[in-house]
Image (tube, rainbow, N blue to C red; front, side, top):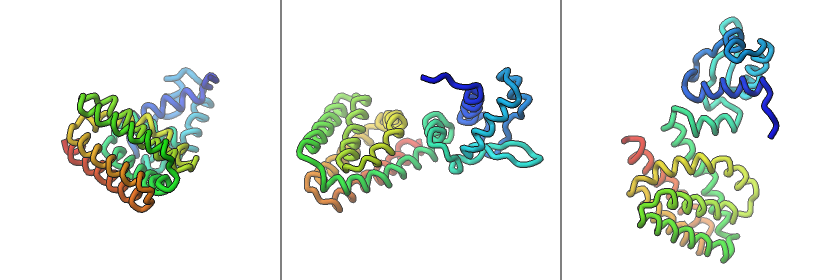
Length: 233
């Protein structure tokens, strides 16, 4: 692995501080002198680090006023947004937006996959659903989450669209940690099992519209469960 340059080190640490909530959206960040002293680097290095974050639209420069943090919805770096989603403080908003993104991607993937899925892939989905049921009975959240993710991953790959799987892959780590949180709630597991069974039946029928609607209902149920059992509590 290539060693990070000093510019990257300074930019990453400042991003870490932004993600941790030390500098929330709209707030100003330290100037060049303060950052150069903190990192024991030249002002030129700090200036280049700031330019990196400005280019990613994480920061903005206001002439005569200073450098400020942009709202998350203006950031253009997927890596930075994913870091915020996994480590940031605005948990509720990010959790809802992740489900909205999944709804956009996975309903379409299910619709396409229904017409292309093979008997072998259906058998693998059945196996993962069985593993989810067994994990639920054993109160094994980690195994439940692993089987849940594998079930959805099979549908993404069954769609045959390489872009869908590639776009979704960076979300896997975040989804795993968030599913571990929500799946601790027994009622959420029960609801998930019912929705996954409906999706399984729809995929087995090879009915594209039925598969799309089944996945959409699952995403709606997931959002409702998040709001009812996690965010409100």
